[in-house]
Length: 380
Image (tube, rainbow, N blue to C red):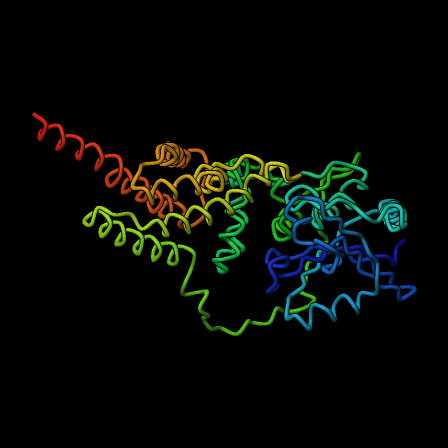
């Protein structure tokens, strides 16, 4: 075991949404035999039927693979991603235990696992494989003044990708805004790297030692070409703001003419209901952080039930009670800002839908009331 070195590999982010947060792997190098392999817990088949829905609902399986380190580096070289290695300070027995555990884990019946982005992923698997086989206690340096939520940590890596960030925030619920422990924060590869960098190992009858013996950059990350796309200009907030402006201008015209353009309500309610139906399905997801999502008060699946009644009554110049229901839901949505951080532009969208509730009331319900008063005056 003297010739064996085991290291933690931390890879920089890629361009695809599943690689925006980086990657973690283990390297096992035997200088005596020349054997040099990468142990990767992030293998998956993108062409698996219904891969995206399975990933969203927490039903996606990943697997562990062991292959030559040169092939591992070739992939990251082609993608222009950097790789940093931290050599772990281990005893002979600890190295042997880790290698035996990896061999057992690589068996066909053991290598597949149910992937969970926050709780069981490539970083947590690599961490546990190393830490669980150290004969002692590993202590991390914790800064009590620094706290973070899952959502905040995700934003550190997807903030330069506004639409990806919007999609993540749309699916993440209240539990994603809770404060996390240091161990929970290690689901991110770079957070695990930083934790290892300052960690100490406390072995019996030995002085505390650094967990990491040495660190070096195996592969420098290439600087990505700069340039803006239409998606960088028309961010979710911009698109929603434009939509809201158009709807408000239409509402002003409707109020002046005392006539509702029911086609606007039909389009908004259908889109709102379909998005709400997706959030409703997330209640049954295996991801704990998406089951309770207050954005469902705005992106409301009830819109799919209500749109027919709303449009029919609107064409008859009648007020639908559904607008009152939506008004209550939207007001509760605004209160939910105290408990959950919403996706970018969602509060603006709430104002857009609230505008439809108000204009329908003013044109139909209030208009009908004013008309009845005028009729009573004539009778008198």
